[in-house]
Image (cartoon, rainbow, N blue to C red; front, top):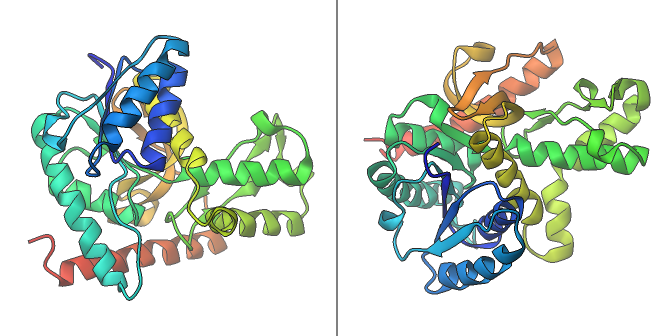
Length: 314
């Protein structure tokens, strides 16, 4: 990493929270914000720049007026996209967000050709796949932020159930970043103790269900999606790459034979370091989990097929 420069496309709640988290952590030398809404990136950059007075390393925060001005970044985080509205069909949403992604990625590939891209835009696994097809880059440089958030939500539910071990609780969620995600509390530890020693099957089932509905629960109270959790999850991944700390984080990555699948992006545990994905970890899955993983992969493939049918990749 040369300048430890991070670009964030989309300075909305998640993008701005990711940027602010990085400023407070002192992970990078410079953060560059871009947003299509006039003044948003500039205003938040000024605000964060003033907050940086109290950060460990005085991170520089700037704003640009176009994605093309986001040059020579080591990492680019993409949060751009629109939520589903009114009578919008699934195909409509997919095509709109895929076209937004295509435009953004074109600028990133041209002006930050050596960057690692972290995709946060939804539908997460499909948009990560789109980035692969639009860039043709090595798969280690394109990562979807999924399990870092879903895993944190599961760890929160484990802590809520047990009442201890908040910072010692492992997290592992695989599959798609959506309704078919697969939280695996039985695979994690609290401190040095396996969760299966501390939680009943009934408690695990409740944790799995609450994890899958973690985002919806926030929407119920706020009327909008959460952003502290997602933003901090992005910052965790960025910091792991910039510091080359080789952390294990579930992420949406392009599989090339791992877990028996090819040419699909889905969440699995990976090692993150200076090259992005340093290694894809293959864990053992029992028959039931393998079956659920297939359902998850098939749901992602259905969305990719919609884009193919609409000739998006041509």
